[in-house]
Image (cartoon, rainbow, N blue to C red):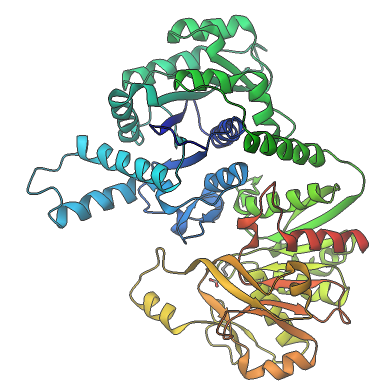
Length: 554
Ligand code: GLN
């Protein structure tokens, strides 16, 4: 396809409050524009000072999404990759911390040639430089740029300034979408537009004038309210789009199409809507996927045993969103319904342990995802022992694989205090241990961005379950961990009892996939990497699909 003369940018900002689905709205706008045949990419800006999302607590911030190139980013990047069906580069993500780090580095290396370096314009200029670099690297016709946080906050002012500066320079290449919230207070039962009107005004004060306003609310917005918002923001009524809650987030691109948001946005960017085979093909595939998510034939019920679910009195599954989405994509591929229960690993440790373990029988499969630190560890090991003995399909990810190996060492090989040195540094059998280069980093307090991160190749062993699932000898998967399985000393004993290392690093030294011989257990597989990070609606991950298939049979 012919390239556009100028690359186009759509900034998406949030009004009234956070958590109203700005990321999903921005991703859906991107998907919808993909259907028009343009090449679409995304950039996410997070206003916090952390240099990346790798050092943040998952209960507070949700999952850390690792890109192919190893950059640790916010979970919204996962949404972009899943909706747009693409792998994004590290330039596609930035924080206040990462931008300041760049500006300071440039200043220290005389990059500003002795000039005074000021917050404005130098910081917004660095933001613009990175946005453009990302668009160029992705060869995007249109780049969606999501600015995190809410309009009016102190923290995202410099990013809004960058957006304003870009608009000033290339007015026809930049559009703004405000995603705002429309409350319906219980006491009134009426949808209120005032907070959104105020958000528009605040945005305008920073020199940014929205082209489209998307109003998020549980129900639809009527014409009267659209008109009120349009009047106060100098827009046409048709520029105000209602975005009510839908059955599934994946319904949103199609919903926006019905609202003709594609035509409206392209017009603002002075682009023509074109029909193109790739766009049509993508739209068809997407619609089939959405239709399949609504299949309600067979149901598979899966338990995810994690530890980052509790925040105060609330249960959040944000820390595992990619795992959950990956399960949903495979369920859609198999045209089955999936029921996911989040179980706290800690509940399998205390006095209720046995009672709770027995409850696992009702599941068609048990998944133990990744994690860090001590809490819930013994609970996970107990769960794995139970599913191994009771032949319940099991899928372990990262920490899940490490604990599956510890469980096997302890309970089958009788290496009694076997453990990971992350949890019990003095163990006599360090089945899972830190690599020497990682140890050096820890000594220096070098915790940020220093794990084994990003895509690595692995070689699969012929005749194994893993090889059958992937249907290829070499795979590439994304990693995020500091510890590794170190069972070489005991390898023969493990193998004799049916524990198979079915995938290793290309040099054969690091185990990447383990499984139990299918004569012992119908489906017991665990991986050192994070397969969920590569699962896409239009390209579900084969292990998740195989796991659900095994669940269907059980
Ligand atoms: N905590 C373990 C490690 O660092 C596992 C990490 C994970 O599950 N992502 O190796």
